[in-house]
Length: 136
Image (cartoon, rainbow, N blue to C red; front, side, top):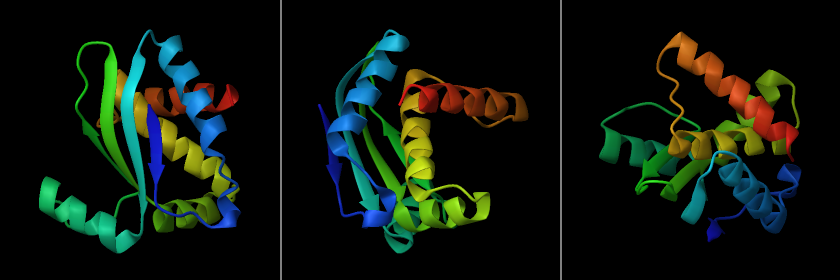
């Protein structure tokens, strides 16, 4: 079950049913099953507060993924700042909907097991994001 909470403006061109089907296909590609993922679309201030309270980080970010996975079963709460996504889209000269889907799949890829701490990991994460976006 995948649920989306919060409001996105029309610039994101977001369809929750299509996104859910896409994410389930991705999970299956990596031999995982989505049991429950809750995506929470929030503003910068809300995500900063979560970042400070739960991770002791005092900076803005576009996504925070809470991983509750068990074996090959994906379970998570994922918080995404629509303010950061919109700003990233402008800076990268891409449509907001493309950047939103990149951030969404970034969170799912973390649940699957991909990391992005080192340069090599970040490069592999970007490769996997691009692969997943090609499946949309």
